[in-house]
Image (tube, rainbow, N blue to C red; front, top):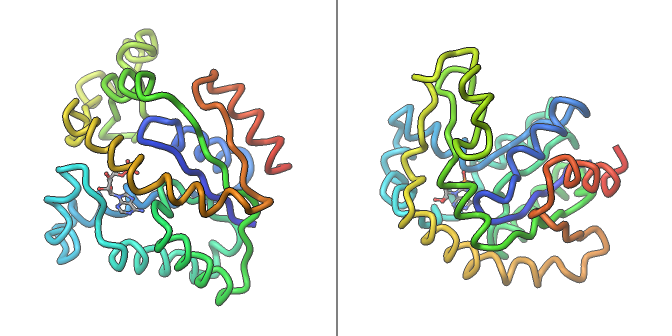
Length: 213
Ligand code: AMP
């Protein structure tokens, strides 16, 4: 079964998805990563989305949906995807239901990682990613790991959109666009709300319990 992780930027979607990938053979599909990759490749899609991405605004549904369709229809991903950052609004959720149905797949759980604005700000402001191995650390919380980082500290960089104004914008966008999505899913028996201000290990255990992996 496929899984959906919903939460504001900094809620820990990526970290929790990585656990499912490393320990339970899931495949993480992050629309944020897919979109950043288009920008890196300087593709036609990349050129269209660069401004919106940098301003913390949502990219057009059609673009995101078509990137997702490619991943779901790929036989080797069948029923093994953990969606990270998708869907983000009702229109994307409806489209996802349709694509899942057309491809004879299921969504086993929709998990909302619920966390306050203050905690998110701190987590995101400190977030740095290694350009070489892609690991994400927090400069306030992972001081020791940063010192010992195997690729060297010079590769640990802040993401370009991780500046405070953009963070607030991304948070506000999330509230505005995604709250209706939570209402849309709230009647679904597979919808679960998890307290994501807890420690990573506790959230991990909760998700493992929900998904029964
Ligand atoms: P993320 O890495 O998930 O925080 O996403 C980074 C940025 O990518 C967002 O601020 C949006 O500009 C864009 N983005 C990612 N996923 C979506 C989506 N499902 N729909 C629209 N825009 C998205």
